[in-house]
Amino acid sequence: MKKDSFTYIEDILKKEESTTLEFKANFDKEVAAKVICSFLNRDGGQLIIGLSEDKKAMGIQDIENKGKELQSYLINSIVPEPAISVDTQSINNKDVLVVSVWQGTNQPYIYNGAVYFRKGATTIQANSKQLADLIHKDALRNQRWKLNLLLK
Image (cartoon, rainbow, N blue to C red; front, side):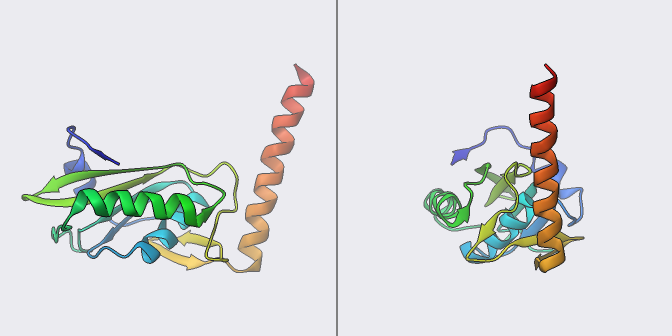
């Protein structure tokens, strides 16, 4: 986890929740893991913890420890290991956690025995069709990669 000296939170605040952005007022690592898993199984994204849906800064107490705890939890609870970054930003003198997630290259990603998926601004548990689509997409990506190697 890092304390980011570069402030980019103003740019985030201009956006609304979407397939790649979610705000959570309270620190809850289980809820965060579902959201992160859903980002990994789509296009990546950012989760801002300590900021309500109406963009009111709630802040996080003991942010350094909470950030380390969250990062460790996510890395150890999501399979395969996720590509994430956890840092802090300040809004109106209140610290928030920013979890940046890159699109997963080994989809599907699983948290607590389930696959989560992003539909609009909502995190949902993937149904069998969505799960099959993720597996099929990953298989196609691997086939293209192998074909490119053969053609070289």
